[in-house]
Image (cartoon, rainbow, N blue to C red; front, side):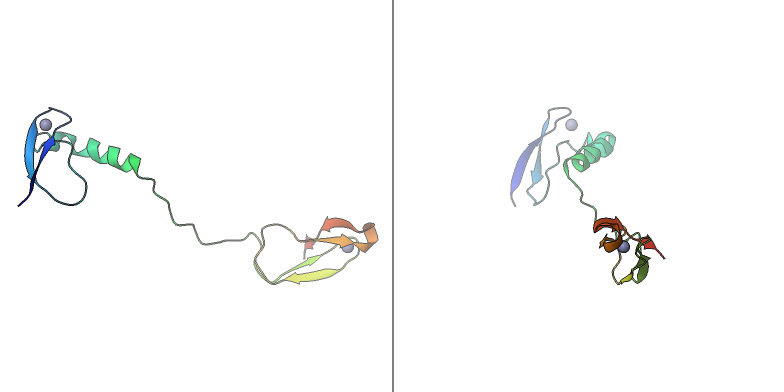
Length: 102
Ligand SMILES: [Zn+2]
Ligand SMILES: [Zn+2]
């Protein structure tokens, strides 16, 4: 059985503990009851938790119909989009204009 000597960061006393894998306690067993929560909070702060991205939601659902208010051309978008589609309008000197949701 392997033993390791650990030193308490609170009361500076040393104690022996069976060597295990994983994180080492920084506080001796007699101090743990009062400081367990604080130590846990500190550990958590050092770990960057990356949340899973929420499911992709688009502002406009797939299958929306859009029309140009100038030349009345209409298109159907089969994917979800967040911004209105644009087209270069032949009636407006081929300026790129956003379409309007129908
Ligand atoms: Zn201690
Ligand atoms: Zn147009």
